[in-house]
Amino acid sequence: MVIIKRPDEIEKIRKSNIIVAEILKELKNIAEPGITTKQLDDHAENMALAKKARPAFKGYHGYPFSLCASVNDVVVHGMPSNRVLVAGDIISLDFGIFYDGFYGDAAITVPVGDVSDEARKLMKCTEDALYQAIKNAVPGNRLGDISASCQERVEQDGYSVVRDYVGHGIGKSLHEDPQVPNYGIKGRGLELKEGMVLSIEPMVNGGTYKVKLLDDGWTVLTEDGSLSAHFEHTVAITRSGPDILSCL
Ligand code: MF3
Ligand code: CO
Image (tube, rainbow, N blue to C red; front, side, top):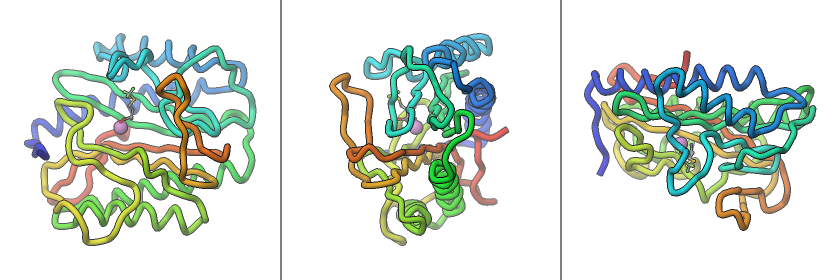
């Protein structure tokens, strides 16, 4: 069941998402060579608590950390560890919080020091694909219009869209209906309506779209070891167009 949000509820979801965006901005600044992913997790958690927000991922289906920190060929759900970031890495920072009854959820992929042109291109393509998808988040469109436009942008550069993980509705729960695939067919699927709020989150691989899950039950890697990037925004569908709630 897709839950439609009132304008006052959308403003509360915006508040939660702005907290997430502020924290991601800080994390981006400190994601430099020499820092560990666990230090980033500690920072994220402390900044959230300082803003009276509860980290949303910690304890979610038993996930033990506040941040998902996915380096290089890690697609999503990378667990913070004593891994030290080095120049040339790319890292996806995925963070969510609960504040005043509503969830916020967003992700960015950032370069650590200088990175290869190929890594840069993959990140840009993934972010472009997210904005392409967001443009289609308007009343009267179908879910497939979001999905297909995202896939089209990714494949234009010869990259591939991860199939096994998708975006989602969000509100009083972190994950609500509908599921939002990043690949699909124009004109198909659920009709988008004013008041829907979606977290759109393309995961894009340099090689095959196939992924594998590590024995820890969380870490998702590209099957072929290629790089992967991930960007996520939470977006409200309004009569005046897509309203990105997770931007500053
Ligand atoms: N942004 C991701 C999602 O929406 C992060 C979830 S991680 C988890 O699914 F630990 F909370 F599962
Ligand atoms: Co999400």
